[in-house]
Length: 330
Image (cartoon, rainbow, N blue to C red; front, side):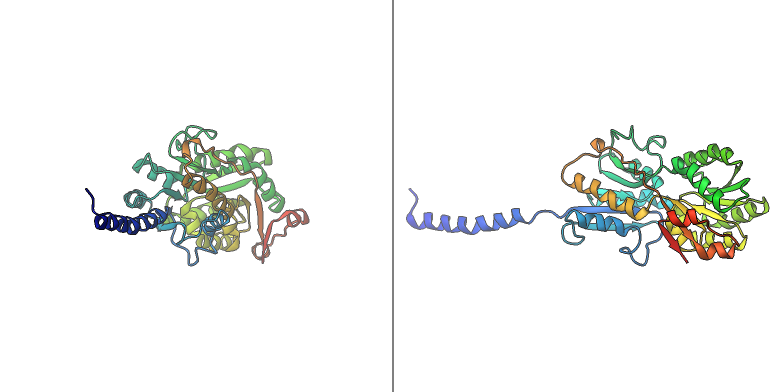
């Protein structure tokens, strides 16, 4: 038989325990997001194109440090570190990993088949083997496809409008980057339509950039196209200086190159791609599986021009180019 004192004591303990249990239940685990980039950490994440991801998360009600924890990792162009960083993040039990390039995505995919991977700038995810198909990725990778091969004809048309004599077009590319292969082929296929041919020059590291540019100058290239790669993005200031020093008009695939001195760019906004990738992370945190999230293919391309570089090269942008330019730099 339970005494009144025992019963009251038990009820009292229950009254204490219930609020503690409720508080424990209310204190939910804060999601943890890993992030891997091949370049060096920018001085300001917020103002860099990576800030687009934070912006996109905010738009969906997620605040860094409050509703989610961000684990930023930058390989500083030491791509052999991708696997090491991936293992570190997986060991930290992150809920999803955002990777800033196709090579990084492959490295992470080799480490884990279960942790969701979101790629904001996948080059050609199907051909490179990242996913089974765009409609149904089928594994642990999803995101956005930045296949610039489709934009090759238009970018060459724009370049020819500015550089009238366009018979030889140099192309700086990294054969170690699988997405560069299809983009280079896109330019090679499109070039004859403009009476030009592509002269590919390989650059796998920062040390190979200057020799490649010098070789293109000696080969009498009329202009140079710089494909998209972490090595080139990291070394874009050097690329701009050497191209201008060798008096080579240039076209890149991202606006970030034009900001620091390349002649023009035609491609998708990196900041916008990272912003849109936040929608995938949001869905995954709410229970969606990467295998069921179709790869998005943005089809909005931005044109940017650098007037100062044009003057230094003795070139002038036609009114038609200036009228349609999304960004103009002096």
